[in-house]
Image (cartoon, rainbow, N blue to C red):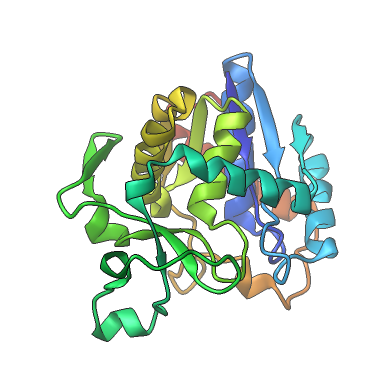
Amino acid sequence: MRTRFAPTPSGYLHQGNLANALLNSWLAEQSQGEMILRIDADDELRTQHEYTEYIFKCLRFFGLSFITSHPDPQIRHAYLKSQLTRIPDELLFACECSRSSLIDHPCTCREQGLIWRPGVNVLRLHLDENLTSDIDGSTYKLNDEFGDVILWRRDDVPAYHWANVIDDRDLHITHIVRGSDLHASSALHVHIAHLIGAKNLATANYRHHSLILDTDGNKLSKSQQSHATPTALDATFMSDVHSAAVRLAGELNINVP
């Protein structure tokens, strides 16, 4: 049994991130398994060394056991690009559309048969308009949720959805604990896992917990912490995170040690 905590070092971890780390650790402990710490640092422009250091500092502060996965970005990007050959060619297409242009005009790049040029245009995975994927008892129409999803970005780095699936496949992840805001993403990842034959991920145990909100009722975000001072690791913060994690563990039937 393997689960993972996969933060992006684009800001200092907040209470919700750490509550999720506790949930993954507790689930691994009750199942006599392992928790992998996977640092999601593909976007080098948003990644800062101090954010990465704070991740390790927090996990040590909470006494969590984990195995670290932090591969070299250049070797990793070449590998992730090579894995795109596992997707059927007819489902992949180059696209020159910007996010803003798609608001007013539908994409016609697939029909044009454009050549994919890494660093110039994006590579998308076509999702048929009637394609569905089931997760946690819910059915999602993937095209409605994502359109034709980007697998490789214009700046020549892997997109989140692609990197996430390959990482979880290669790390032999069997259990995934995420926030409810990633419910549809899990459905997409299951679909991609089926496409590339990643059986462990296609049949993984997915659990989604409610989100921890700020005092204004908004979702906590690391990007809001990108220019902030890190939260002091003290007894009050530990108690707040632990209490939140205990509540979420009750939602997911995870034992609290």
